[in-house]
Image (cartoon, rainbow, N blue to C red; front, side, top):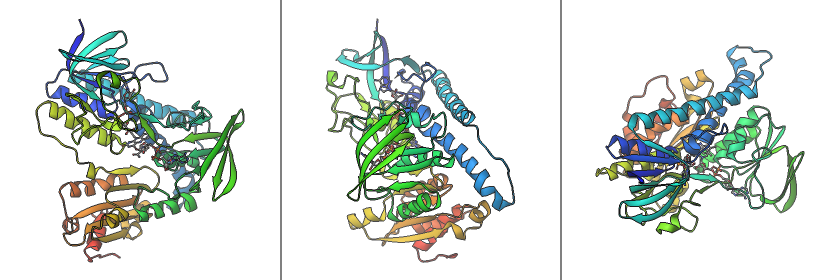
Length: 472
Ligand code: FAD
Ligand code: NAI
């Protein structure tokens, strides 16, 4: 007799596991199917984010940043450290330990909330009298409702095999056994910049080849300009824009990449290569065709604003659907769908999803860029403030960057906030709250911000938008 559930969630990344927990909390009999096997050969929960994404990358960013501080920043504080060195194996083991604790934490939460974890690959079979039949291993389970949270995987270059030793995607790039002398990166997107920074700080000579002629095209122009200065001039990442990748050869010694730049043929020779050119949705082998689930031309599952697919009682959330491929976006969709299934009202506002790039300094934004506003013909005003004028930033020796507030020219509603600063990932939360409540720049300007804190720069930028800057 097939096991029967009210809800089966396929995938236990941040979209799926959060959905499963919330559904179970609301009294829905829930199972989550997960096929991930970790390098030790053990089945694990957590998906890309916990195993080979957000969590391990941030652990290595922190370790490499600490090494950078010891070797380059402490001297200014009067602290001298001689013979600083690092043990890469230990750094990687620390990262792996964090991953293990976090994935085990989800196992604990599943037990606590009575979510059944079914190990293996889920494939949708058919719709029957008891809902949808789903094959997992040799078994069939049935579900009155299904949430597909199968996530995404790295896009590879056609004809270039990824062995995750010499030619790597995000998986191999988080587990190097030694620092490559020369590291090539294809794609100056989020992964290229974050992981390029990690290996650069640990001593690699990093060259990044980017197809687009514009750097960080999705970011506000002022942010992209500041980031370019930081990463290239100050930190020595060698970034080439507008390149066309040609033949790539892998040999015992490394990789050679032929490419065109400004009409000139060039070659990059490196010991290891990271290919970080975006991600593709995991819809293969899911049985979408068996039940008539509609995908778009790029393989994403088609959904409406509330993550409903074209099939009754089948929802899809996270990286496998439209919208930014971000863990927090997927998690919020998971909560929304669980609450809808429990008969509640729920929604996710895709217009206020924060973006963070965890480089040093960090880059964070929410809402519209100036370019978007110009294109849409929306009248706006700008308020900016620099961290160099802020006492806390001076004390922390983290004076790079700025906050830029974009507000509607007549209503003063905040339309976008853009931050470059070491703690931008934390500072952006205030802007997200403000925008969610349709706050004006005057609202932030009139809120008391503690002194001395970096948040005073958000305050000052909001004052500036109203023509009332105090410290500029
Ligand atoms: P995933 O996390 O991809 O999980 C999907 C799960 O479904 C997987 O475990 C997979 O095994 C399972 N699965 C798929 N098909 C089946 C099937 N048929 N049967 C059973 N199981 C199945 N985002 C951020 O917000 N912040 C960050 O700092 C950040 N850093 C990142 C760093 C890197 C290096 C990478 C690669 C990504 C990063 N991301 C970050 C993006 C983030 O990881 C994803 O947006 C997020 O993991 C998507 O969650 P998801 O649940 O939709 O999918
Ligand atoms: P990305 O979309 O951020 O960047 C890919 C880059 O590769 C783009 O700039 C693109 O123009 C370039 N590119 C594409 N094809 C190319 C080619 N043939 N040659 C040269 N350049 C090429 O994708 P990335 O960095 O792989 O990351 C995937 C996703 O994972 C991100 O979009 C993001 O959603 C998520 N992520 C989020 C993080 C965060 O929130 N901090 C960190 C890391 C990943």
